[in-house]
Length: 251
Image (cartoon, rainbow, N blue to C red):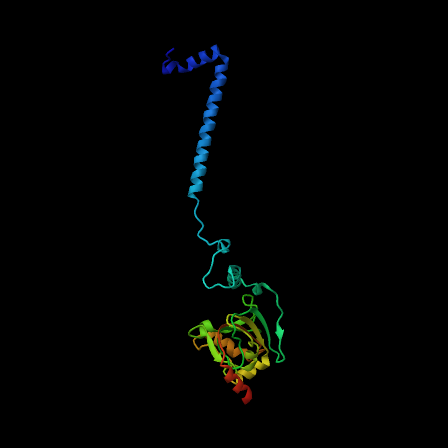
């Protein structure tokens, strides 16, 4: 039987009436075709999304677990732990109480340094330093506003001196004893020691161009002059052992 386009619908109805199961077969076949086509599209979409997934640009630390580092005689696990300790030091998160010294100075070590050299009498050291006025605390700076910071008041973000040479006052140096390169401490110096240090010209002072800091420094000595020194050691060089012996004998 040949059916024109105009009579297609009528022909389909006649075929279905002549064979009742034919309609069910046509419907089932149509559903199967649609399901198959949908599954095919879904798989193509899934494959496309998997292929288009961007590669991770970060480095997974787990992938470095078996990576050998030339000259690393302590092992890769130690090396990874060292990296983690630099990026996110555990001591930064701990609530460690301040250590009180006989002079009235107290300090809290936020981060231990590395290396063999420790600060002692005669050490030539460099440090990044911020000095806060404890009595002038604000909501933004609860530890006290800054009157001095090496980033603004020095050419190379570092203050350098020889411990015990009288360049800085002894109470501050006492609070720094034993620090290594990379160590970070907050050192609180009482008001009386600060007044004595100013009289002896042993306090770091802000540059004249930093007018706000200069004003704070001048106002410091009209009230409680307790200072908080935040010190990060950048270098430590100790004198030869013979020089240390001579210094002890001289004393």
